[in-house]
Image 1 (cartoon, rainbow, N blue to C red):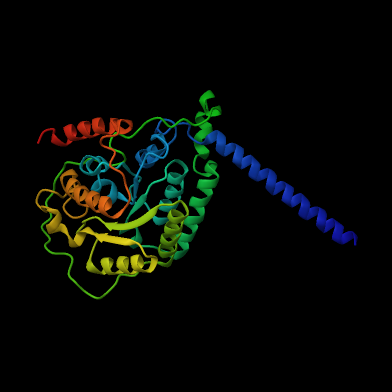
Image 2 (image 1 turned 90 degrees about the vertical axis):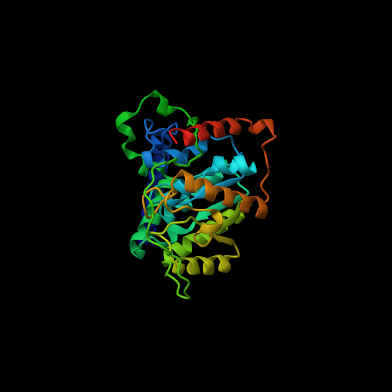
Length: 327
């Protein structure tokens, strides 16, 4: 009986210690998390544009784009605004993996209620080691729920502002889009050769895709998949795999690699780096097509005559000035 009581005391003390440790981590997280959305405040440069979605007016986005660099160089929210009148934000990051994307989407739903989430599919096909991806997913979860794991070095530059509530105020002028005007033509020829073969999608990526779709449905958002033209990253095998997954989950899939002629992609003028990314001229063509598709297939509103959104017209004017500069 005494042994049982001693064991009971040990278990209780262990639970108390764990609870105290978690409270300590939670408190440190609240202290160390950057108090605004700038690199100076502690945000990683890679995250700055995506995290600036926190600075947008709450629940003001009709659509959100998530993906890696193919998405942030290939889809322009301001071009879609000008042509279709719905608001959108590009929450994509360099080499963003599926685990990062899932928790980025959770962050989006803290501040926005988009009608549609646009998922760029290249992340499904990144080379992946199952154990590594599981560990990365667990680490992303830890950083999301306890940000002290991500911002533990903030203690080195604590100041009085760190004891205040976070205030994200720095908006991204292009709504997460990266405006790139350089051009290296693509000369590799046709890359989407029809086949019945399908490229394998790793288990962890398939699992996280399902979780993202479930998260969107829970938050009242529709989920669509899109593949931005990229001769380096896409083949017909990728298309087949993405279509299988879209059919499995009952979501729409738009593969723009199969529509480059219809979109009007000029491989001599619209490619940023010769093989992989579109420049702004290619992105505008993609955004024209994608914006029209979203307007036709999802319940997004045209806000162009709504004074509440009048600043978007100025954002677009500034964006176009930069696009036209030195042409």
